[in-house]
Image 1 (cartoon, one colour):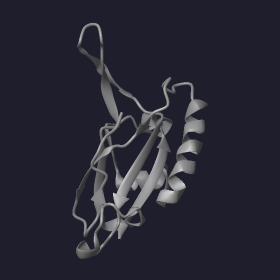
Image 2 (cartoon, one colour):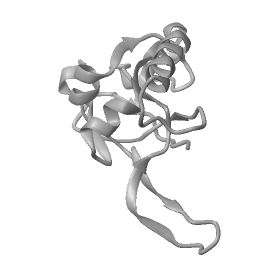
Image 3 (cartoon, rainbow, N blue to C red):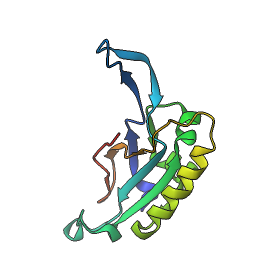
Image 4 (tube, rainbow, N blue to C red):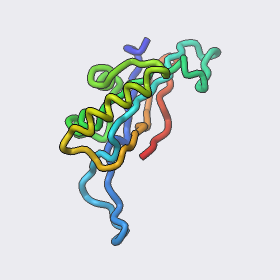
Length: 136
């Protein structure tokens, strides 16, 4: 079913607001150490329950993977190929810890430990919903 979904996860890189000048930087940067991608996989609309974590599939990627991609958004196909997963909700915590450890070894890592939850835009799917929030 996930092969038929055309999802795009956006908001991966952003400009930084300078506190003193109140102006955004020109360059966009990765502002999280780890990204968690989520997609609801229930195929039957009447049984869809966004609060049921068993209906969701998760993927986890260190920020280094996003930096290599150097894009504001990625497709579900990229996530399936380059992120760890699909994972159940019970597996997400360990995957985030492993990705964070990998990211902390990266020379380009941001100083604070943050998990990014990209905004998803989905089209042409039967019942699939992407995570619709963003956290920085």
